[in-house]
Image (cartoon, one colour):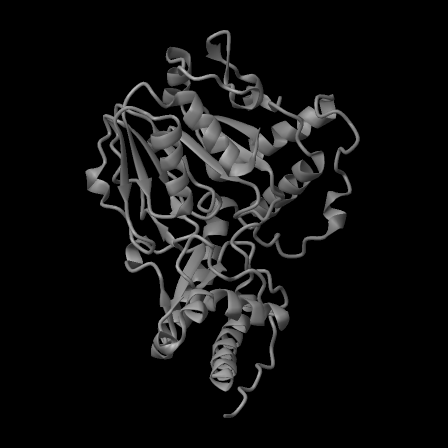
Length: 391
């Protein structure tokens, strides 16, 4: 057996993780030199920085003035849990699940909150549920882009404009990368650590007018912890949506978020970010289509994610290997490329089928992806040779 020749070019930045994602090109710790650390976030300067995050976010994403934006604790998970626990229960709910996080929201609503009339509409990893089954007399909970499955909704056309229930959208790997239809989204959440390469633990929560109406007209029958409370004396509490966060934020993380937002503006705002994602995904899709050992996990090109690209290994050789190898093939290949310093954290999520996952968001440089592809081919050939040698 001949040992495969290693490629000559390495990615300048080998960070292709789907979360936390790589920071904007050129980032350095010096970008955080103006962080308002060791001071109260309620000081005028602290409040100004928090409000600046909200203002820049609104401008870049085109969020309507009638929608409220807040920084909340607990990353995207905290933001979504806050919304579900505060607003579900007044009517039935349709829960769309085609990846790990959609399944998590379904479990919360159906098994923990035990919402009457909860319906889970599922699809296997790589597929999208039948969106025509959704009943918009119910509330609807869904992920715009299934980060762990690589499957996203193609648009918001399937959402009824005259819906009676609320839509709850987990947009954590779609915001700042895809065009969200805010008129169709009543509750939207994401985290800084995804498309903008920010630091973890902070979530973003956007509430439309109908969500505010729900908060003021409905009180859930279960107790709400302090970090979930969005009302005060039965009325919508505007304070968290004006920069007065529910709990103390990290001002170092806030400064990092501001740096990412300013970079996004320098790229041309949302259109510029989406253009970078399109170039990245075209490069990755072209490589996958030309490879003979790997294919997309997402079966339908119309619902294939352009940010979190999930891959399955289709080489017939794999079927002849033992179960342990097949189960851990993504981890083994990812570890090999990690050791070479050319790709970090690219094994599929532990809840997804074995394979690889490449982040193609705007903070990734296309040149780094192009440098990675020959290494992926080399890595698979090297892994096969090693396994055959151990047989």
